[in-house]
Structure formats: structure tokens, C-alpha cells
Image (cartoon, rainbow, N blue to C red):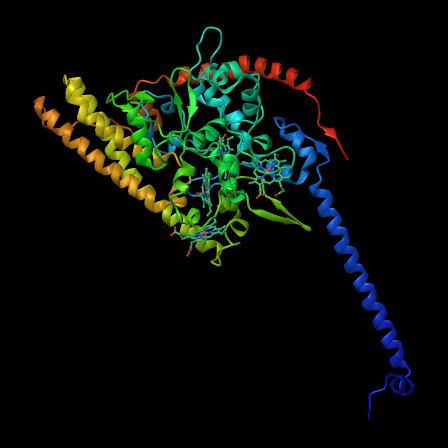
Length: 503
Ligand code: HEC
Ligand code: HEC
Ligand code: HEC
Ligand code: HEC
């Protein structure tokens, strides 16, 4: 028998109702779906249209936040300092307290006073105010630093440099900018105000590319997702009397290429208090080390792990809570990796543990070598006799600090970190052979006695720091001087125009 709808409905009338109601239901559901898709599309279009006209150099993050509330909301989560991983995290961590050897390695330099692990970007201004390395400058006390120190701390920096020029900015004493630089690292450091694309604003980075004959503005979007970070997470130095912030990449970005650059200029950040070695202080070569690792080789960018996309309804939003990816493995790693959260964390710790273990070996050797050299100087060693020792100690300390100061390096590029640390161990052993020969020449052939360096306080006392005075000067400055600068800044900002609403 041929199928006939009319016959069927005549035989079973209820079937007609089923068909009628079924069709109505389907049409209804389709309608809802279409309307929802349409609504989401409009939402998406609306969200990408800026509601406010922002100025390229608008330093106030909350003003950008008006236009982009979702990103701003994730940005503000950086205030949370509760997360600690094995070696990093967003909590306050006293690096000298955790490892007092650093006090000896930095003897004669302000890092021996106070050195803390990095926290979220939102703390950059508070932390530079509070740290003992900036001292307590006022009418009677000269500055310890120039404005160069502000370079990586704030979107006020591109604004002021645009106003007065880089040269003048870097030369200004640090305290000369206390009323100008008040907003922590934020939107204007990374974004083009017109369309929110990524834009490099850091003058020293743009210039480092220029000197290599490259135009950074021609970089691809994926490159910019790492170059945005290379504005600050790199090795740099304060060049010449003008303290002009300069990236030492003219010969290349490897440890050896940068060392050669510094050696050519006979540059040193300070003379080591104990061994009298001219030392290069490594900053935080996160970008340089990262480019030697496997993730960089596979085209993964800093933002992939530290600023992953998160879903918010129909929207893909970039998570602006820049932090340890271990606090957010699902979005940071599991987008690409199938392994469990536990296994991924274990992978990270395994690499970090191995680098840390070798790094501590190098530190112990270096501390010993600085103290042994100081003893040789006490026994009357001449500058001439110290030349080969200084050469090895400078190279060894550069290798140690390069790895130690790059807080993510032992994960970003574990093999390169281990190569560098082991080469540092080799340089230190050469130094110690020279020291042993020198001591023998000076009629001393016993082990040099080592002081008790088991705590930060003992190490600081050994190098003669009066920590109580330094801290009380700072506390007084924070209480009595700083508020005046901040009041001037508030007054200045109150006169700045609010962004104009355009929709
Ligand atoms: C350290 C650099 C950095 C800072 C600071 C920063 N952003 Fe972003 N932002 C990014 C990156 C990276 C992306 C992703 C860009 C891409 O892949 O196209 C992004 C994307 C965006 C987008 C595009 C939509 C999206 O979510 O992907 C908006 C809007 C945005 N940011 C707003 C802000 C605001 C508002 C602030 C300040 C509160 C801010 N950003 C601070 C790096 C930064
Ligand atoms: C304008 C300079 C600047 C830029 C641009 C910048 N950083 Fe930072 N970053 C800093 C400084 C300074 C700190 C330390 C702040 C503190 O401890 O007060 C920091 C801290 C961090 C931390 C430690 C956070 C924590 O919770 O421990 C991470 C991770 C980080 N940055 C990653 C990035 C990544 C990834 C990018 C690019 C998307 C980037 N940064 C761009 C200057 C910058
Ligand atoms: C955008 C994709 C992507 C993201 C995000 C990503 N990875 Fe990877 N990862 C890769 C690729 C690709 C490789 C290289 C593997 C290969 O090519 O066989 C790799 C390699 C690795 C390796 C082995 C490399 C080594 O050092 O021996 C580890 C471990 C690893 N990833 C851990 C992580 C962790 C932890 C995170 C999150 C913090 C993460 N990855 C985020 C793509 C990614
Ligand atoms: C494949 C994922 C991945 C990429 C890509 C990546 N990182 Fe990391 N980063 C990590 C992990 C994992 C850690 C270790 C976190 C920990 O120990 O808590 C880390 C640590 C850090 C830290 C120290 C964090 C802290 O809490 O103090 C900084 C700073 C950092 N990375 C910056 C960068 C920069 C800059 C880039 C690009 C040049 C980059 N990272 C690329 C995964 C990544």
C-alpha cells in the first residue's frame, strides 16, 4: 500500500493533532534559536565598538575600564595575592630571606638591602615606593636612582616621554617623577587607543629593533603577543651619564652576545664590595630566554599562557589577570595539552627543581669565591694579581644572575638555563684555581674561614648594612614625604579630561 497522509489522518484523527503541534513546536524552537543567534551577533558587534574616545596616552586604567569593563574586571583580579606555587606566585616573597646567599652576591649594591619576588602588575607602583632600593630621597638626602627606574612600572611613562623626550626623562632623579608616575602598568602600555590592537610603546625596545635594522611596527599579531611583554621582561642597562635605558642586543640576544656587548663597553653596574669584581647585574631576561625554548619554537606566545582567552557568554575575552599560569592550568595549558592538571604541574616543578638544584651549587661556589678573594685582598693582593680572578668571577656571576633573575626561565627554557648555570660553575672553578694560587703566593695555604650566613640578618650584618636605620628612614619617608607627592599627582589628574562618550 502506498503511503498517503490524508488516508492516515482519516483513519487516526489524533495523528493530525500530533503533526500540527509537533510542527508548531519545531517552528517555535527554531525561532528562539534564530533570535538568540541574532542577539548574540548584535551583542558581539556592539561590544567591539568602543563607547568612549580614549587618548593614546591616557594613563588612568579606570578610564579605559569604562570602555572595556570585561577586560578591566579581569585586570583588577591581580590585586589577589593569595596564590603561591613552589617557586613563584603572586604573594609577597622576600628573596633575600628565602636565600641569604644573595646578600653576599649583591654586596655593595642596593639589591643586598631588599629584593622581592615579582607580584601582579597592579602592585608595580606600591612596590617601587616601598622597596629599600629607592631609598628615602628628599631635600637633604640625594636620590639613589634616576627616573630610568620607573621605565617598566607605569603607563605614565610613555605619556611623560611623549611630553619631554626620553633623554630628559631618564636623566631626571627618581624622586623628580613621584608626582607624575602614579598609575600601575596598564592598558596604555600595550594598546592602541583607537582599535585596541597591541602596540609597542616602550621607546628602548623600538630603538633596539631600529639598531638591528628592523621595524617593530611591522611585527605580526602573534609576535606582538610576546613583544608586548618584551617591553619590560628583558635584559637592559642604564647607558652612560644620562642613564639612558638601552637593550644590549646589538650583537644578538644570547647570553654570550650580550656579555660581549657589555665587555666591549667595559660596562659594569657596580664593583663587588668583597672581591672588587666589576659586575654586570642581569635584569630579567624572560623574553630572551623564552626564545630559546620549545614553546617559542612552536609559535606559542607569552599571552597564550599568561593571558589566555576565557569564554564569557558568546564572547572570547582575554584574561588580563597576568599571573603564574599554574593558578589557571585549565585555560593556560589544557587548551593545547591533554595531560592532567597534576601531571602538568609536576612537569613544571620537575624542570624548575633541576635548574634550582644546580643554581644553588653555583651560588655556594660564588659566595665562597667572593669571600676568598676578599681575604686575598686583605693579605695584600695587588690589582694586577686580581685581574684573572675578576675576569672569571664577572663571567660566572653574569651567568648565575641571568638565570636567577629570569623568574620563569627554568620552565620557559630549562635546557638553556642548565647550560648557562653549568658554564657558570666552570667559570667559578677557574676563578677558585686562580684564587688558590694567589693565596699560596701570599703564603696562605689553608681554607679561608667562612662566616655564618644562615640568615638574611646575619649576611647583612657581615657586609656592614645598618638595616634598622635604612628601614626607619624609609618608613618615615613613606609616612611623611610620599603623601605630599601623591597629593600633587591627584590635583594634576583631577584636571585631566574624562574620556568622551561617543555612543
Ligand atoms: C601587558 C600587556 C597588556 C595590558 C597591560 C593590557 N592588555 Fe589588553 N590585551 C593584551 C593582549 C595580549 C590581548 C590579546 C590581543 C590579541 O591577541 O589580539 C589584549 C586584548 C584586549 C582587548 C581585545 C578583546 C579581548 O579581550 O581579547 C581589549 C578590549 C583589551 N585588551 C582591553 C584592555 C584594557 C581595558 C586594559 C587595561 C585595564 C588592558 N587591555 C591592558 C595585552 C594587554
Ligand atoms: C610596563 C612594563 C611591563 C610589561 C609591558 C609587562 N610586565 Fe610583567 N611585570 C612587570 C613588573 C615591573 C612586574 C613586577 C611587579 C611587582 O612585583 O610589583 C611584573 C610582573 C609580572 C609577573 C608576575 C606576576 C605574579 O603574580 O607573580 C608575570 C607573570 C608577568 N609580569 C608577565 C608578563 C607578561 C606575560 C607580559 C606581557 C603580556 C607582561 N608581564 C608585560 C613589568 C611589565
Ligand atoms: C598554544 C599551545 C600550547 C600551550 C598553551 C602550552 N603548550 Fe606546552 N607545548 C606545546 C607544544 C607545541 C609543545 C612541543 C611539543 C611537540 O612539539 O612535540 C609543548 C611542549 C611542552 C612540554 C615539553 C617541553 C619540555 O620542556 O621538555 C611541557 C612540559 C609543556 N609543554 C608544558 C606546558 C604547560 C605547563 C603549559 C601551561 C602553563 C603549556 N605547556 C602550555 C604547546 C602548548
Ligand atoms: C607555555 C606556557 C608559557 C609561556 C608561553 C610563557 N610562560 Fe611565563 N611561565 C610559565 C610557567 C608555567 C611559569 C612558572 C610559574 C610558577 O612557577 O608558578 C612561568 C613563569 C613566569 C614568570 C614568573 C612568574 C611569577 O609568579 O613570578 C614570568 C615573569 C613570566 N613567566 C613571564 C613570561 C614572559 C614574558 C613570556 C614570554 C616571553 C612567558 N612568560 C611565556 C608558562 C609560560
